[in-house]
Image 1 (cartoon, rainbow, N blue to C red):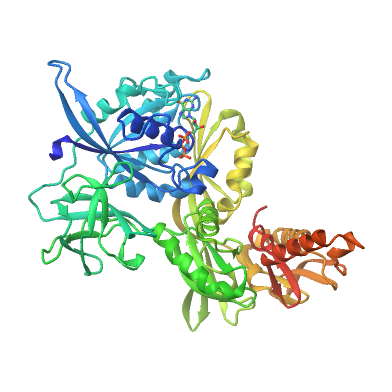
Image 2: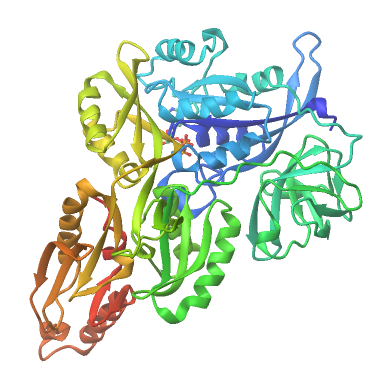
Length: 605
Ligand code: GTP
């Protein structure tokens, strides 16, 4: 395929505006997948994606499309690479990676909802990358669709011309035949050169049980074929190309990939760390300049992940290794907790990302884990002659009564964009100020919708901001945020003590003004989730040596068999098994059994 007949594009949109459905329709239209056959949302392959109805991982598919020449009736075949991307704010890192391989995007907007917060965020990602943007107004089959209003919003917000918008229904098929011709006519072909030495940008990598590490990538310059000896710019390691080909949509070996093509590469990479996303592959012995790559993922949320049963650490370590290969945006380092044993401290892009990772560990790798309450990364500076800095990704690492004076405490902040129907503006302003927000902008995008911009502490955002925002606006407001560095804050560590002993995995760092409220909430929550034990348990929250909240649970001798007195043996066994099952998710601390929920749900308000 000459480069002039290749187009690489991505579909970007706010969550649920119809990206994956539109991608399915385009794959059907080009005969890449059969109509009505296979699963809906073809590109959402992961079990979590299907269950949650969201796209987590960007996927690529190659399609062939014959474009008819209206004048002489002849046609020419084009090779189109479509990259489906996730819409949720946590996964914008995947979006920016996908865009590095594209020259243009379809910006999908739901005709009933109009521009939402992630439409804005995704538009700017594409705009800053200088990509051609084709607006697609989708769901025009719906009774409440108002494409004219969306066109006006696109003009006001992004200066996109109303006549450039395509109108589609991915449900009924209306307008779909216009989409691929527009892709071919408006989006330029890739810019690489065939005669230059090979440079292949690694976009993604994952582990396949049968074939080992598989990389997806874009051939920017030159070409690659089976049998070539290649090298990584990042590591200098060399490999033999065992197989290469396109994703059509399954791996389809072609033996070679040329300039402008997107496809897969199997080259006997062993450790997943060898397959670095953003790395440049080139022919061994030919030196090339590395491609720009990607900025490293910024971890917004950290949590400890521990085996539910201490002896399973090795199994967990193996599952973590595999899964971090599939998801390069997670960081994992070993850590030890007095309460939970040996585990990992993991960095995530956000709470949804963390939940998805947790779910994948369990579903795809059968790992039984306990995840601790999430925290954001703080920076503390102590006075010890000179100042010494401590990055705190785990609250347990901050001394409860530091020997040195804390000279400064810094917390991460974000700039949040909220788009809402105007009637909810008041409630949202109240919410943002309760969360220590500072207003940066307040404007209207049309007569009924307002845009608010706030600088907010990340901690106030990650926990439950999104769900509160949804509930006070009946689901009508949308929200997106972007990292904005650090700000000084009056922070304290809240310790949790059970029978007088601090449980390191339950400590948390909060703003001074909220410490008593948080301490009270934690104690109340623990009281609810801790089963009554054989003896009285005192639960305390403390800042330094000062107890700020206290509760106790009275003793109970627990006997599950009491219910089947005299009884039926099978029922008795079932009850005992059930009790054992429940125990798996418990951690014994001292003599108190702490269930999984105690760790995970603590921060949810
Ligand atoms: P994420 O992958 O989670 O970011 O969402 P998405 O943008 O890929 O949206 P998805 O394709 O999953 O569609 C969301 C919902 O809208 C699904 O229930 C679709 O069936 C529905 N939907 C998509 N396109 C249309 C359309 O043109 N008309 C109607 N009526 N419904 C549609």
